[in-house]
Length: 312
Image 1 (spheres, helix red, strand yellow):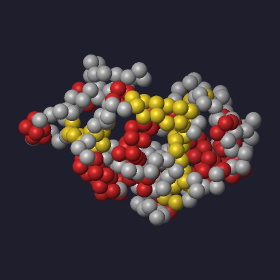
Image 2 (cartoon, rainbow, N blue to C red):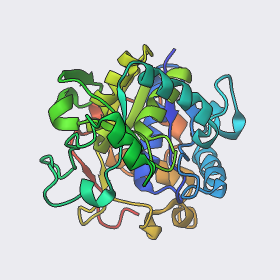
Image 3 (cartoon, rainbow, N blue to C red):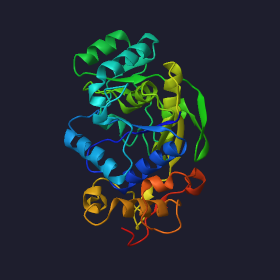
Image 4 (cartoon, rainbow, N blue to C red):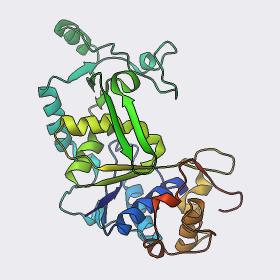
């Protein structure tokens, strides 16, 4: 059975881009006769107050796309809040340590983002391996001054996969990814490790998420293999932009569900989103359940989606 998932970070109310991702994840899983898991990605608990997690669960139910398990509903893979899963992440962190793949990193944010630091074509910083080969004495001396973050050594290997929507993708881990974080200096486990462990242990078989996370997939696939965990299939959808071509964010209050609920019914919001992503030819109101049978990724464009002026 297909098991899809929602994995929101509850740092604010959901906006239209979040809603579109949740809608497509739900439709894809339901079209295949599957289930949907809700995992709340609140690793940084200070930025993700519980009230937003409560609201997003209510919002998904209001839209007619509730999860089948997870969140407060619970299920066999509980807990579904990442802030409650640190002991689980520690087990897999320890496995990577035993393989000799983890090392402490003492670089400051300023050092990592300095103009002289290596950057990729998309502007992301490539970690140059500054702390990769420190001696035990150097580690001890630096640890006395500040706690380290922890990175994983990636091999010189090209990892490739076929995305369920965007097609073939490949990345040279050493040259296009670099040694990435597993745990921050404050002890919080990093997204890359947590998401791999969670999707595997929660039985997720299909990950639907935005194209901005496409470049994270090869390192995650490598982690799945290194940890001997089953990897899901991946489907990356185009990003939703406003009428000016700007990416939506939770700072855009007028595009948040809090404001949209005051103006539209769930069927109106779903119908407009279905129109924007090619699932119907007009922005007519539509319950999400009515879109399941005819759903197809072939209808969804592969390039970024721009909201028509005045649609919302």
